[in-house]
Length: 135
Image (cartoon, rainbow, N blue to C red):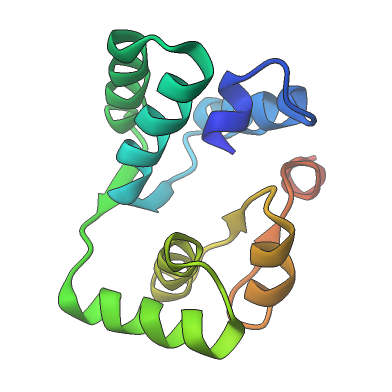
């Protein structure tokens, strides 16, 4: 969602940007794995070919006042591995799902497999669904 909100050329960009703005405006907590910072930097650098800008966007995201970055501990890594195996998820997707489950929060994503398979473990919403819940 964070990368989708950054890239105006992606489908659903407006809704991703809108849910992030709504979350910030309301001061709702956002709990994500520290992995998010590297994923943002990687995706933005690939799209823009601007390493400095990618790092700046990733750092600005990490500094958001209502954002909590969760370390990938051995225990969380084991939980993510179990989820990845049980639900046939990519490793990074399973890490996000493990964090959502541990903190009893919703996972907002555009990834179809993560949404479909992860919904057995935690509340998984598209940005559009999350926006509808804020109204």
